[in-house]
Each structure stands twice: as structure tokens, then as C-alpha cells.
Image (cartoon, rainbow, N blue to C red; front, side, top):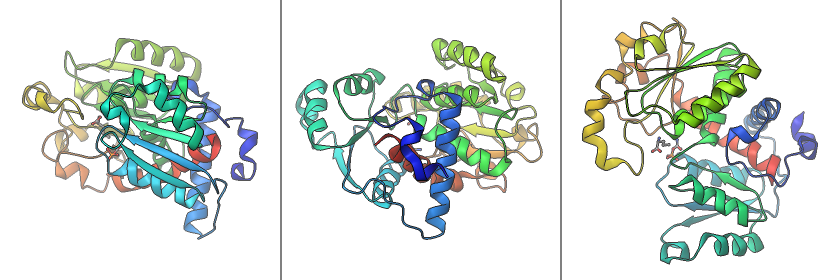
Length: 316
Ligand code: CP
Ligand code: NVA
């Protein structure tokens, strides 16, 4: 039982900025802890290691899952969460991030932030004396990827050696799935149109990690090549938050990258479908796929709660 000795994990006080900062063993420990905490919940057993602790939740972008799962997660762990929207904070009026970090560190025990530029997250972490958790930037979404791999493990019984195909925008979600997948020994295949492929630095980092874990990375412009024999099929919106004005151009660029019934014929017969949500049915995925028996999107969404409780309990 990992939950009974959280200090032994050696993660107290650390930030959670990206999966690259955690070893494969640590990522697996967080997933296993998430699974334990889910069982406590299902058994109605109280587990309150964060009694008396407060998490600040800074949101500069919209959210359904992240806001609710972090707030409920803190409550379930015995602590308290404060929702801090950009409009309510003085950062909305120009207070610098280092002052914000210094001040919040005197009140809170942890900060979760969803923002635009990744550097804002990095600056906040640098100036805060308490753990800072990445709840999505334009560059990455590691809490989601952790919950996703927890969900795959629950459904497939293993992670290493599986093939995950990510079809669509080489965005924050793609980046975190690539790094996390490589850390956990999966074969990651990404299909994106020209001009929308994942960041070159992330590709290189993923290949380096995969070389150590037995995983691999394929980046292609051909969705059929990526999805062939995949155990896990993943997609995300074509225009992420902050890129809405590119919607029309992107609809044209991504026309051949829709996850539909014809494309998923090429995946393994028992493939599972994941989507971080929110989804746009009829764009990146058809209803025929996202609402099919292959889809495990609600287990995936639920696991945000338990995977993040693992992060909170381990770090705070
Ligand atoms: N998947 C995800 O992070 O959802 P929200 O934007 O609703 O938080
Ligand atoms: N790539 C999406 C993920 C939303 C959870 C976005 O950034 O909008």
C-alpha cells in the first residue's frame, strides 16, 4: 500500500510541471497510488492526508474536468481548494508572477495553474516555495496524460509494449502523451498534418526516453500508418483553447485526420478509444467512434480525480 507511507515516495515538496521530470518508476507509483485511492473511494473509506492544507487553483482558461476534479480531490483528501480565476486575481491587472508566487506561498500549501505560455508556469514554480502543478499550458497537459495511462492500465492490464496512436493536432495533449508513453515503454505513433506536428524538441526528448525504456516514437503525416494495429486510439480537438480563430483553416488542414469508423478498422479489434474532452463530434471524431463500445472516455474523465489525488497526496 503506497498510500500508507506517502513520504517514502520522496516526492514531498516537488513540482509537477511535466512527466519528463519524473522517472518511469515514479510515474508508475503515481498511477498505482491513483488506483489505490480510487479503491478507497469505491469502498467509502476515508483517506485524509491533506487535512488542514489548501490548494490554490489559478485558471486563466476555461475548464470543466480539471476544476471539478481538483476541487473534489482536495475535499476527498481532507483539504480545501480555492478557485482563483484570472479576472479575480491581480495578475489580471498586471501584478507580476514572481510577486504572486511569493504571496501565495505564504497562504497556501500548493498551487495548480492552467495558463497559456508554459514559461508562466515555470516562472511561478521558480518563485513559489510550495509545489506547483501544471493543469495545462499551451505546451503540455501532464495531469491528463497520467490519468489516461492509468485508464489504459486498468483496461489493458499492462502498459509497456502497447501501441498508442494519437491522430490530430501535435498540441499540449500530444506532447504529454508522447513523453508519458515513452516513460512507460509504449510505442507511440502520432499522425498530424504538415505544419501541425508535435514540437521537434519533444520528439527528440521522446525518442531519447524511449531508447531507455524499450518504447518507440513514430511521427507521420499518414493517419492510416499511425493507427495500424493500435491498442489505444486517441484524439483531441483541432483548435485548442487560445487557437479558436484558426478553426476554419484547421478544419481544412485536418480533414484527413478524423477518427472515424473506417480509420479505426485498422486498429486492433479490441482497441480502446480515449479523448481528453471536451470533444467536437463530427470533427476530430465521429459519434460512431466516441459513443461506441471501444470508448472509455468517462472512465478516463473519472480518473482525472484519482490520478490528481495521487499527485496532491504525494507532493503536498
Ligand atoms: N480534459 C480537460 O482538461 O478538460 P477541462 O478543460 O474541462 O478541464
Ligand atoms: N488541447 C486542448 C485540451 C483541452 C483539455 C486544449 O488545450 O484546448
